[in-house]
Amino acid sequence: MTYLRELHLDEVNISWSLPQSLANLSSLTSLSLSDCNLLGEFLSDIFLLRNIQAIDVSSNYILTSFLPNFRSGSSLKQLRLSYTNFSGELLDAIGNLKSLNFLDLSQTYFSRELPNSIGNLESLSHLDLSGAIFLGALPNSIGNLKSLSHLDLSKTNFLGELPKSIGNLKSLSHLDLSGELPNSIGNLESLSHLDLYGANFSGNYPIQSAISTP
Image 1 (tube, rainbow, N blue to C red):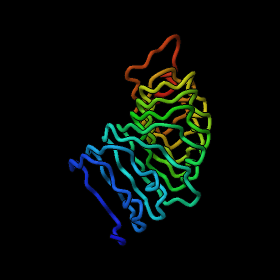
Image 2 (spheres, helix red, strand yellow):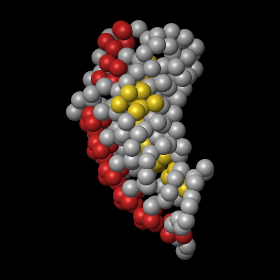
Image 3 (cartoon, rainbow, N blue to C red):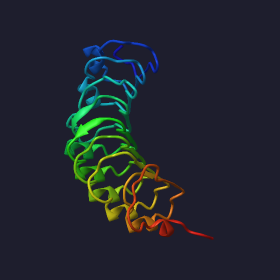
């Protein structure tokens, strides 16, 4: 299968660990194994395949692994790891994924802080961190994601307030979050969907500034 470009087995009950040979599929561009009941550890070398553009291993609840040191020039555009047992540290090298437009780390177990290099993902349009376990505060560099249209921070445990730089996300149309709103949310000119389900507010919050009337 040297020339295999796409492998999609979503909802096939595989119930075993992936073979090491998958990491040798040098022509692979798309791997989708969502909800396959995968066991063991996902092969981190697959993330580094030269031509890989899309990886979806979401909803494999006991699948473990970590993200590698991504190299500059990666072709990866979509990465879906939601509802897995991925853990460890998100390294600064994630900022090398210049082509990445979709990143879903919801309900994962990555520890420590979200690195500042997340702000280098200039093509990113969708970022879902809902329910993920991160330490520390959301980095100010989040405001550098000029292409971001969908941001989900609901049920996360980031410390402190959201950075004011959130207001720099001029392309943001969907925002889901828990916690305290920064005043800069009123600068989100493209915002059409705001979900504050489960948020705990104290004092004043800038909802009025986020609502425009004709």
